[in-house]
Image (cartoon, rainbow, N blue to C red; front, side, top):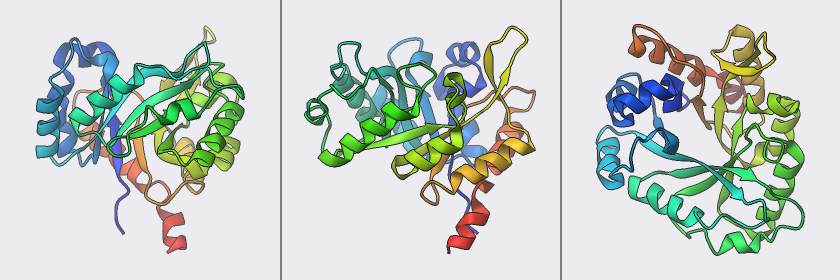
Length: 259
């Protein structure tokens, strides 16, 4: 049985720790742990990286690269953020397979054809993620957006963040059923409500993994799934390897049935 590909969002190792060490310092660890893809985070670069040089290091380790930016695709004025072009260029220089953004302020009045002129015919795929905000973390705007994208045949896919739906009280199983056809990348994180009422990401328990496996049945077989929960411990290599095994196995039974 072929292992499903697993990505690591470098934010998982802790923002301060990663900024201090530098994201490039984690690449050997990921390669040794059996990771397929590294998710670089724009907000964790202390200064602008030499994207081409970093991309060569990543390629030499036979890792895929995804570039994540906190950019909201649609501004509060209802137009595509013009900075998208710059972010796509950085992703291209990195050799990234995709650029991840959040939806932002999309509604039925937005002109999706305005987005078409900003997207390259080749190079990194634009992936739009459900975030934790009222504007970008609900099912209905995401559904409207992807239906419009389909009509225009744009090169856009979805990053499905399993945990983020909880911030807006949206049921992840319903989201998976309605949006699954567009999903090209899955962010995995369990969520816990703290005593002060805040929601926080935590590592999965067995029940979480079981629920995630059910969600995977709504997505294309072999979709890349990412760790986006805390990876903290004395032995980061062993910890990362264990989480790669857990996520790689998700949906394996369904894929065997499909075969």
